[in-house]
Amino acid sequence: MKIAQLHSLFLECHKVSTDTRKIDHDDMFFALKGENFNGNTYAEQALKNGAKYCVIDEEAFNTSTHTILVDNVLETLQNLATYHRNYLKLPIIALTGSNGKTTTKELINATLSKKFKTTATVGNLNNHIGVPLTLLSMNSETEIGIVEMGANHLKEIEMLCAIAQPDYGYITNFGKAHLEGFGSVEGVIKGKSEMFDYLISNNKTIFVNGNDSIQLEKTANTNRIVFGDTNEFNVTINFIEAQPNVKLNYNSLTIQSQLIGAYNFNNIAAAITIANYFEVEDNDIKSAIENYSPTNNRSQVINKGTCKIILDAYNANPTSMLAALTNFDKLKDTNKIAIIGDMFELGQEAKEEHQNIVKLSTSLNIDKVIVIGENFFNTETTVENLLKFQSFEDFKSKMNISDLFNSTLLIKGSRGMAMERILDLL
Image (cartoon, rainbow, N blue to C red):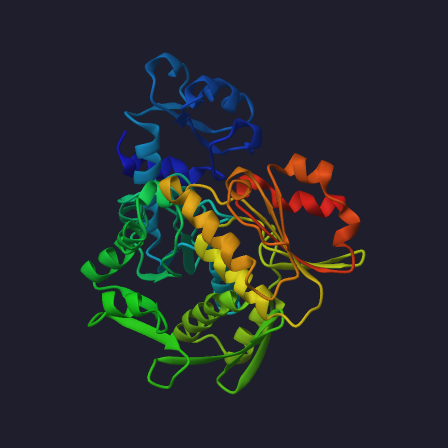
């Protein structure tokens, strides 16, 4: 079946689904495959659960007039998403980067939705499956689409841009994330810059952080909008403070966000710049930023018992850990305790990067540092204000939790460490 024909059937459906447990009536089910599952085997169940059509790629499961046999389900999903994106003819804003992608995407969505009907990536569904699903969730009412793109290898952003065909793009930063897949920081820069390559080759618009020399260099003589803290840029935004919430100045307006940490300033500034480009009123931008409240363990300030908790435990890499610790160092609070967990996907750099973080954290204005995980446990240090635990269970069984009371806590670690579990102990 040709993509145009499949798209006509898609328009008859409620939405796309890849999980039979979440199917609604009249969904179009795509039978994706993985290492440990084969969606084709669930086609019959999908129809029983209410799916209108099932897209499959194995002849043995083509047992109904409502099953659609294709050569490859994943490629068909991606091709359908591109076709639908062009069918709608709406502007697409894409963003990627090592840190802050999801927060920036949420801020862009919050500001633009003050004026437009937007559709944005849900959560962090930003890979080769999530990007097509995001595009296919857009409809004739959508005025602007916002697509987050993640990657841990070269050529992934290139592929995602080919699917989404963005008109605008922004890279949050280049950091020490997914070094195991990219191989080096240089690999990260090359991989993330695949978005620049697409936008430049197609004469599209790039939003650029003027404080990032790499971004400025790579986008020189292109169609770009630059933001920063000087009047030489297209949009001027000035950082005021982060104690712990970020406060900034934009067009004579003081904006007090609910986001913690100076590292979130650029995320907010990017959203303001993009909203400014699309002519959202300044007061609406201010309202959107000030009313945005972080969720899902990202830059949250939580008061529990006698503790003030800075919870930034959604994920971590050396760059984001450095930013979180240096910001914590600058807080004027007393009795500050940093509780940090292992950083994953660092490959051969894991030992050195964990050692660097330990050295940094114990040199800052932080009263006590607690590290959790095999990588941190195996670091070498004799500093008195450092406590090491081999695992979360080790921490849970040996740590005197009352020692954390009456403190300001920073909690951060990679997703696999699930550092937010500490809250249950307080």
